[in-house]
Length: 235
Image: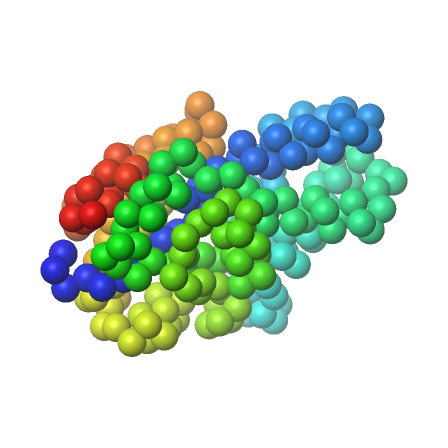
């Protein structure tokens, strides 16, 4: 790993717990408004809409659209599906921005802080800049910089996201590690010459999770969590 100068992180699910955070906020919101719903199912359905909404942008079926807008559109459809009506524009904005207020996994902040001593660290996420900056402030994520999807105007696993990030840092792909709890993300990065670090988040999707529960290839580093990744990276 001596050549590695920067470590870029997938964020949703890898660094922050989107599922637990969305369920908690929706539960509180529902309680305050007197709305009853299966908020766990709501959170899972909202996340399930994530990839299809980006696929329409990736395919060119719709022009470039930031994730905040996609999240808002998915939210509005789910409210209809779950029979929830009568929310104000302020309510809709507040709920959309739940994704700006996600809680980090217990090891994330300390592990990132250790890695920061030796490496440039940044998210490399499908989130847009505003979302990622707000999330970093909320969760105390100690990034050196923030690389959002609205810089390349593309979503992972488009090669321009990974290669554009390396270029912005002035580094060759082999000097940059992609770190994630998702095997597909690492496979896309490796194909472009980047180094790879995997750490499992076996409860990202709840107790019945079946994908990404372990490393599915011989990634450069396989760790238990971000703290263990820092140890294995000499921090």
